[in-house]
Image 1 (cartoon, rainbow, N blue to C red):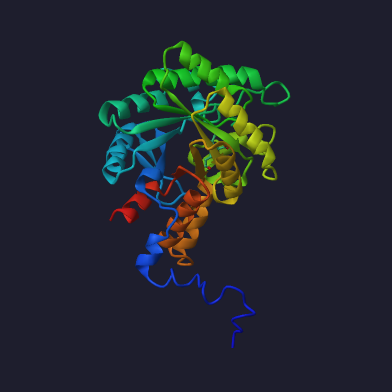
Image 2: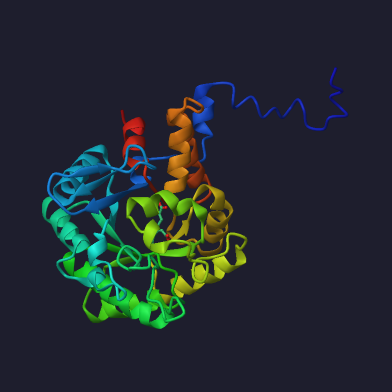
Length: 336
Ligand code: PBG
């Protein structure tokens, strides 16, 4: 027998009372996951009517521009309102100076125009970083010793951002982690009259081992080889540094800030949301997707309930939205 006097507030307080029925559980629910919260990353490739599976990301494909446009229509019908584009650049046009990154007729630039032409209401976000375009797979330009140089890279990122803006992008999302790039990009956008072009900064992007399937998807893994991105992406051990990174990006003119990867970094999301109250996002990255898919396909976890639980976790941690390869699927689950 429980001694009621010895046990404090029990039984006047029983937290299980509110959990007893579905209606009262619903009434006290603090976080909700809506289709509006989801941003779909898309891999675009050259060609016509092409779709090519990515082995380490079951269910995700590299799509040619015509198929991307169709995909955007489907996503819009499901209620998804924004996409982020990642290009698969043919090896033969990758180079040391990443010049294709700002080609006005490049793959990303043509994709942006095609989407804005055919599905204008969907928000088009673009990745700003050089890794799909560099022969060495690094996000920036390197010197003779292989070190990724900051300021020259920022100049290249500015050219890349302007080319996306001119093609009609709604949001540029610098994922490169160079110092000062938000400030440089913001100033260049203002100078060209792109006053409302939003910047989603990958403010706290970690040097994570969870990007492996993505590097397969955009075929940069072989370019990178044994090299790492440790000299610019953040050490997974740090979160004070994430606050400093984020504070700077906000001062430099970011409209939205993002943490990447997602689930292992929810503490960082929470600290950033609490500290700045900014529109805050997280990226559930390719390795997270691959792990969830592999376990689901083996029948070891229930895909729908586990994935929706992970996505709700982002909301509870303070995210306004999530970039996730599950966006399309989750939209179908949420609004069957
Ligand atoms: C490149 C970039 C990467 C991802 C998004 N943009 C890879 C990297 O930094 O090496 C990873 C996304 C994912 O794993 O899903 N700047």
